[in-house]
Amino acid sequence: MTAAASAAGVGPAPVPQYAMLGIRVGAYDIPKLNACIANAVETGQRIVIANHNLHSVYLHSRDQKFRDFHAAADVCHADGMSLIALGRLVGVPLTKRDRVTYVDWIGPLMAEAAERGWRVYSVGGKPGVFEAAAGRLRASYPGLQLDGTHGYFDASPGSADTKAVLARIAAYRPQVLVVGMGMPRQEHWVHDNREALTANATLIAGAAMDYVAGIVPTPPRGASAAGFEWLWRLAAEPGRMWRRYLIEPWWVLGLVVSEWAGRRPRGHQ
Image (cartoon, rainbow, N blue to C red):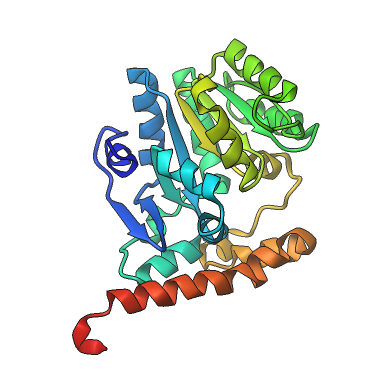
C-alpha cells in the first residue's frame, strides 16, 4: 500500500488526500487527527503523523531524507495558513478548518490522552523545557500520564545518546510519542529510528512544548487566524526565523508558479 493510500485509511473514515508542490497533505482537523491516534491504539498499529508548512515545502524540495520521511509517513496534515492559501492557488481545496497547529492541538490532544489513559512521551526542547511544560499540562489535565526528555543529544544513527533515548521510550511504553526537535532534525531522527519506536502514534511537533512552557510566545489568536502568525514569530525570533520567512518563500513561490502554469488549461496558454 502506498503512503498516500495508507494515510487515507488510518482513521475510522477516509480523509481526502491532495498532492501539491511536490508534497502530499490530507484534509485533517483536530478530531480527525485524534481519531487516527485512537484507531492506532485500539488496533495496535504504529503510525507516524507528520505535517507540512511553508518551511517544510522548501526542505522537501532540497533534502532527500526529509522526502523519504514524508513518503513513509502515514498521516500528513497542514500546519500553516500559507500552505492553505498556496493550495487554493494551485486548485487544492483545503480550508482554514484543515489547518492544525500544535498551539491549537496540544490541549485537545492531552485532554484526550488523559481521558483515554494514553501514556505520552515527549522528546525535544532545551533541558528544563519539558519539565516546565509537563507541570502545566498535568495541572490542566488531571490524570495525564506524561514523561519525556530534552532534545539536546547526539541524534546521529546508532549513537549512544540515541540508544539511551530509545531505551527510555521503550521502558515507558507510550501510546503517543511527541518529537519536537525542529525541522529537519526531528524528521531525520524519526526516519532513522522508526523501526525501534514503540509508540502507537509518533507525532512531529516542532516547538509544541516550548509554547506550553512559555519559552516561545504564543501568537495572538487574531494574527494566527488571519495568516500573520509568521510575522509574529519573525518579530519574536528574528535571528532564527529571518531566513525561513524572508528568503525561503521566494523559492516556494517558484514552485507555485511552475505548478500553476502546468495546471492551466491548454486553451489559456
